[in-house]
Length: 194
Image 1: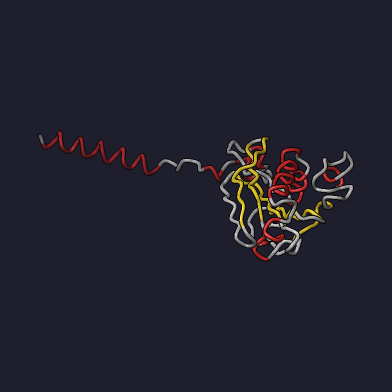
Image 2: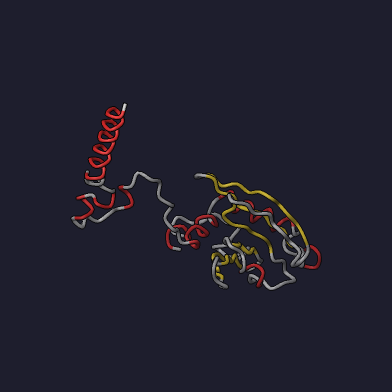
């Protein structure tokens, strides 16, 4: 029995010594291809990469030329009685949702000045609302605080806020202008020239 115990102990001691004497496995960062200074391109990765950052004004210009969105601008303007409801202080607006390559309008709301809340979720790419004739046509302080582009429809122009800044840009002319927000974009208009 003693000899059997000694034999097993020697056998175990031999395998433990052999296992600890083996070189360690190669780690991923020790790969020869990476040691050679090969540049890594994200497109070569098997993992899905985050979408490229798109200029928010580019997307806003594209949205402002979408026929469905233009119809939404017109409907919002008409729902404020062409900017005259409530002595020109009435507001109306909606959320613009984008899924894949489709655009839809959701969450129609009406309210008085500075009392309009348009619900937005993860699919909301922009919001739009009317500034009536009794208010300043430019985006207000609350409008420029939006995390997404915020279209402001007025009699004389269509403005959009720039997310992440306190600025805004005039995108299109007013109701009676040749490049008015209530008209289809020309082929050389906003979508191409910006």
